[in-house]
Length: 612
Image 1 (cartoon, rainbow, N blue to C red):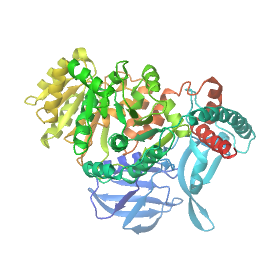
Image 2 (image 1 turned 45 degrees about the vertical axis):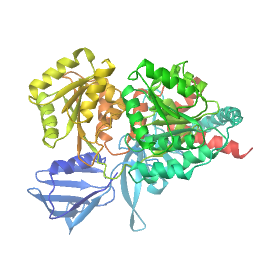
Image 3 (image 1 turned 60 degrees about the horizontal axis):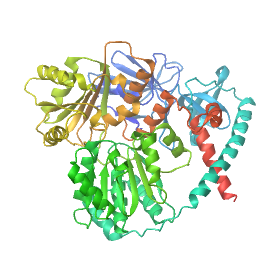
Image 4 (image 1 turned 60 degrees about the vertical axis):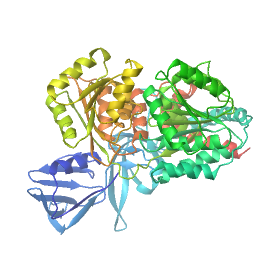
């Protein structure tokens, strides 16, 4: 999260500064009682920032920032004037990019559960030092030096109860921690038995073919980010090993997870193996198919496609070719899991949007997995997958860095208002762009299209949903890709796939009915170009449930690029983790929070491995 930097003589909209302050974790409070607060009085903004021991008054003349004045917080007297100022965010960002906001529960390894208050300064030996302020029972406050932030983690419970604050200096937390640690050691031993069984499965190590890698690198068309290169090296290292790969790549929508799969697929083919890429929707399957054909066009690779958009005659032919080893890469939906699909030499299984596949699908996948390399991808992993990732039970690669030129999506949540919707869509059309309008009731979707046609006469508006016939859906999607449609009224069929740089406005009707991770995925369908993109999430004129409100609030708060991991943690907290690893471990997770539990389990597994 970036600092807010302001300079005198420059033009600023006051409402944008206020929005930035709130987005950066500041609380609006007229009294400025603690660092991380600000107030607005007339044409001035007064700030008590975490990194500045004095109050700062921003004085405006119209929209020009005329003066920046430092004020003594004790007597309100002017101390000095400066020409520029930097306000650090009042949000604690941990090393794994998790953001903790004021008022959220945290767990300190030595002191237990508290409430993060703010980031502030204290004078130590005559110098201001930055501390994390954490509130405990009986109004006690722990001042933690910022360089010791790795001692704390967000508290995420498995149930829905609010945790009890611990008392500083009491033995209660130490006993809880010790008891949990002893149980974790037992559990870690059980896990190592499972690991030992997995270690028995061997595969032939692959050789990384640099000629194939260079060809695919050239056709990528972008410069890889540092995170992409790190992830790619981890994938290649897995493939060179004699143990089957089972790696999860977590990264935001559009951050380049698919590229990792394409490079791995190239190495599979170079080593004489087949590749199966399983995706949740027909639209995404078709998009991957055309992309893969294009990317492998200069290499001796045949790509096949199986979904309901493929005719029966062609499906039969592809199945036969897979069995005989004449198709190298096949991409498809659940249809790839059917009994009629046989491979001659399957070496790599790619699961795109892993969280979309149910228990039965995963049981079918296990039949393919004994010595097959598995690469899974997700922007917002489900609770169990997330837990396994953060506790070290699965190999994980994280892509935090956005592609160059990508901008945050301007996100607004509002009560349904036709005139506001009209404003959003017309703004997009003025700049020659296109828009999605998500209405997830197939029975009334045509009526919604007609309503929008009256509201926005002259626009080319069409409908797309999963119950349309194959030909009709393919035609309308093709027209939208070619820019022949201005507004696509659609169901959640757009949630996976359809990445179009010209579509930069999204309106979602009845957003309160969707899950948080789903809303995040849907929002990720726009913002694929350097243009500013806009998302409007509307809810009906009725009382919104508490959980729905939390979901929409989390969405607005997580507009920063690379927030998928934070969204998954928020989703886990809102929904409750449920029975993540069985009843025995449930109480332990509840007592100390899922994140610290995962961290301790990870350390215990490593400790036991090293002592062998």
